[in-house]
Length: 440
View 1 (cartoon, one colour):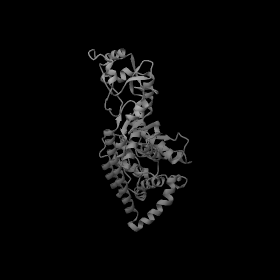
View 2 (spheres, one colour):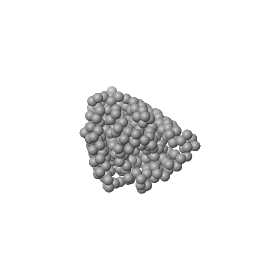
View 3 (cartoon, one colour):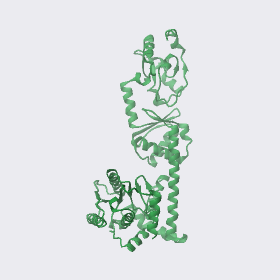
View 4 (cartoon, one colour):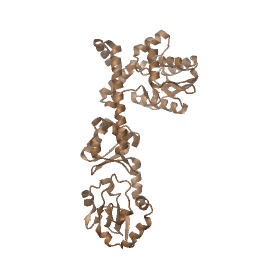
């Protein structure tokens, strides 16, 4: 009864109790793993709470027969809700098939409101996943492999071996269909299953045999998963504490980023990319990101995220940020953007007095005969912020009489809402001489 006991332990640990009104989805391919899972779930829940999901990959000649067989068997068990999906895409790679199957299950879970989706992955599947990712060069996130529970998806058989499930099926007379594609070595997973794992299990005899080996391996993946969770917790807190968000970019001090450990940096970057564009940042792009930050360069990565490093600040610009920035520069709604509440009339009066206009900094602008490009460099104003910098210029002129954050009456009226840091105000004695201090 090892299988049933372990199933119930995993069930209790992962999901606890299920309300009588709740429904669950069981993903059933017809193979021994999913048929044993279906049997175990029917022992734990009434058939009225069970929905069976079957996905037909349509890559084997007998797939239609298997689909009909699964439906017939489920009806015999008293399960009336059997939902079948078919492959729609043309790609038949392992990754494409897995993604399409996963999207099918996610859609069903959303449409039916099912509380959980049960998957039949077992210890050998976990070992295959780990080895595939190890050979591909995955980092800690990848080597964590499959979690026993992630969102609505539950894998209650992860601690059981394939042989445990086969023996259980034989003892209880559970029928199943063997997938003939499992014997082919065209797929990478099948090569691992047929050629590498048997050798590992053979060698495991020196250290307690297959069962002990799989137990130790299961403990290892759980330890990696816990480490991964802790990294994510740390990264999310760091993001909340250090990343400043505005309508035109997200920004963080480069010095703060450089203090992060290597693994936390990777985790932080991946979380940011999920937030920015719901994209996964691959290992190659993580290296490009780190190089850009180290060398203070600009790079565009997954999801069209533009990374600019300038004057000790890292800027992340999403596609929406970039569109907003372009709109701001195009429409120039400066009064709404820059004026402190209640200061518009005062600012208009000031501009009339000195015959000037409020606008953005532009190429070629000068202040006291010195190019603003030079002043921005000297004052460490980061590149992305320079051309969204509010300035007061003589009308139809490149000559400025004020720019943020020079300390005078204009600073009382003008704000810079997206500055990563508030610069120290700088004195500007020239402009105050032109204004009547009594009037203002």
